[in-house]
Every structure is written in C-alpha cells, then in structure tokens.
Image (cartoon, rainbow, N blue to C red; front, side):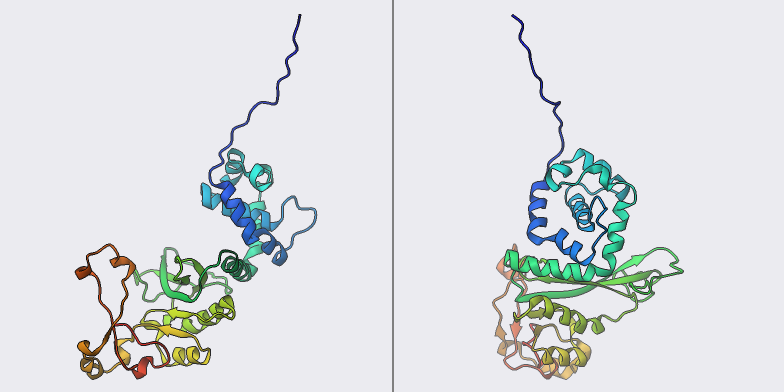
Length: 296
C-alpha cells in the first residue's frame, strides 16, 4: 500500500528580538498615524511615510543599521510579520523620502507623540529638568540651511574653541528622566536666552498641569525670571555668583539655614557622611525671589 505524504512550505527563520515590544509601543503612541496626518503621501505609494518612520524606529531600537542596509535588516528580521512592512518596499530612495517629508513637521510630530506618551503611560511631568550642551563639528560648512541650527565658533562644552559647534537643549522628566522636549540652536546662541522658549514649549506639553522647572545658573536672568513669573511657572536653580554680591553670600549663616532632606542620585550608593548636604535659607533672596529658594 502506498502512502501519499504532503509537505508544508519550507520553514523560514527570522530574528524576532524586541520587535513585538517595539510594535506595541509604536501602536500605543500612534506614531505612524501622527506622521501620516501631518505628512500625507500619495495613494499609490506602497508605504506611507508613517510606516517608513516606524520601520526606522524599529531598526534603531533593535539592530541599528546604515540606511542603505535597512532592506537587509528587514529581510533577516521579522519586520513584515510584526509591522506588516515588506522588506523590498524599503529599498531605493524610499527610506530617504520619509525623513525629508518629516523634517518640516518634526517638531509637531514630536510634540504630539510626546503628549500622547504622557497620557498613555501616566508620565509625571510635575518636575522637568532643562539643560543645554554642545556638539563640536569637523568640516568647513560653506552653506547652511537657514531653517536649521548653524554651526558657529563659540564656547563649546568640550573646550574646543577651534571647532565650530551646534547646541542642543533637552528637557527630561524627573519621573524616569524621559525626554519630552528638545531643540537645536546655533553654535553662538547664548544659553541664558533659550530658557523662555523652552519654557513656553513645556507649558504646551504639560497642558493644565503645574510643573517645576529645574535648571542650572543660566536659567537665572532678569528676563527669564520675569517670563517665568508671568507664566506662573515654579523653578529652582543655583543663583550665579555674578548676580549675587559677595557680601550677600558671606552673610549667609549655614547654621541658620534649614536642612533639605534630599539625596542626589549620584550619591545614593554612598555612605551617609559621603553624600552631599543641602540647606535652604529661611528667607528667599531677591535674585531668586520669583521661584522656590535656591538649594546651596
């Protein structure tokens, strides 16, 4: 008696990794939907800009690959099975067109996705930390797009005044250090002048919630404090020595200041006597009179 055997299709092995988690997070944040609403594409396109951006995000979070190799990554990883994106649809110049379309709307997309993340995951935005840093660059840069930050000489953080640089500001939540806002600035932009713009953007993100803005001494200037007070934004920052006469500092009595029960994250693993100690003056000094007292 002969027996007929039927074989199924050949097995295909692909890398799964963290793609299921990435897919679920992208869906909860509605990344593709947000991009497609702000950056629509023609109906005849195989993929929307939102789908391409999601594929790029998934690539960055699983196995970062040069753009010319994204197709290879999508073939070896379960991209079609998880994201519904065929690998061959990511070839050619399709990868490049999506970021070009996104660029003019990047700030709106980031704001929309960030706001959704705050609501979706219950992120506490009652305390936001703001700071700026610089990135030194090599090259001549004879032509610069006027819509973007311009590399300039200045005072970079890495102490390389011989190189042009651009600056970036980043705001993160006190709850987990989650980035909620960023902005690129010209290399010669003064840090102290960027605070109010960041504060207005953070107010929009926070909505009706009140939040405490934590910054360094560049936050403290007459213009910034006036703007913060008018917006009813609480803040805390060290007063720059240039703004406080030496006599005022010399008159501060450490013994009369109130101890602050706070341990910095960098000191959490240290013994008690090795940790930094902080005290707050009983009265608020005029230089920081528009916000909470400065911790010293």
